[in-house]
Length: 462
View 1 (cartoon, rainbow, N blue to C red):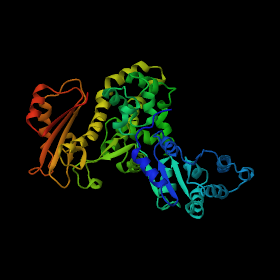
View 2 (spheres, rainbow, N blue to C red):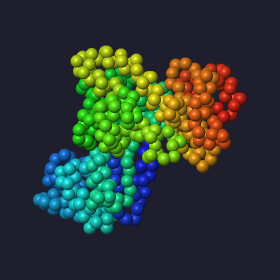
View 3 (cartoon, helix red, strand yellow):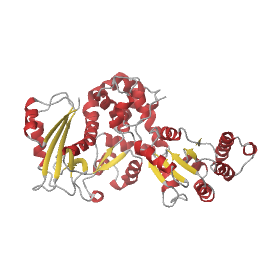
View 4 (cartoon, rainbow, N blue to C red):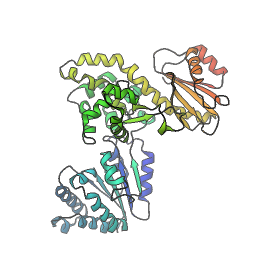
């Protein structure tokens, strides 16, 4: 049995809902493999619960399976022998059973019921309003098709809108918990693996079984028989139509085209044609639109860049999708060599920046005041890996992240100090701090300088 990791806030939400004096209605959704079912099962341990997994079968098959599950759980022979054409009698049995003890009812992959019967949200609304909300029930609807869960349960025009008492959009596990999957992994190995797996528990458990990152990539992704080889198709095919168009957009972004104009030019289409694709990819937590952290009106900013935020999807579209013909024609060694040559500089170094940006918050303990952290770039190709500042104060941090074999010296700091002059935020009144993250430490002269200047911080991530 695998170890349960993180999800502290989510468990607190679920426990709070469970402790309510009245009925609770919780919606849990998020991308596949992210650990929704594991979270629910962990929460339900030691509690009276029923877990029903909906399938892609028709409505009557799902209803019959649900009826049998409930009748078996409660030893209800009358329900077991009943031939039903509607759902209400099953839920009435559940409501009656909850009078004795708080009862959790989980309906997983709820979207399949809505797919089998587009009116199922209305059926569920009636069952909640007339039966479940009056009883000692905690209802959990869970789903992995984000677009469908949003439209059928969360949106304003859904019949179930306004009924939920809590919702959880389950995200990937943060890097700070990665070591808990295998405490024998060095920090560097954690970074290398996280650069491919992201925070998806299913992927992480595959990779931690192999200590060498390139062996893990070969066996778990490049092998045409491995499930990760075709994972992006699996993730997207049920979420979107025109999967080929979405793949083209993602491949273009992965190739380094982040401005809307560059994506459009690369694909040979008008910018307006990309709006829907990008919005859907953002809703699916695959892509994000970044703007320089100091921009005051993000929505109106013309500096926006579209980035793939899912590490695995980013890796796959950089190294697997463009090379599928080579892989399938038996040229695996050639593809492996290409990955070895480009993996660190073209992929890991960027993920390392993301990791460092989350670590910047540790500087709050140094007495520096800030409430915003992100990247910054200007019109003249000046880029700064980390900029953090206090939106109502005067403290500002500038940071550089270096994932390379050499120790970093004074030239890196001087370059960072020079780039900081391009940032206009409170330029004449701010308190400036500088932080450098390095995979392989620092030269003696930079260490000496940092000891003499209290506004310079060095973080060795070995």
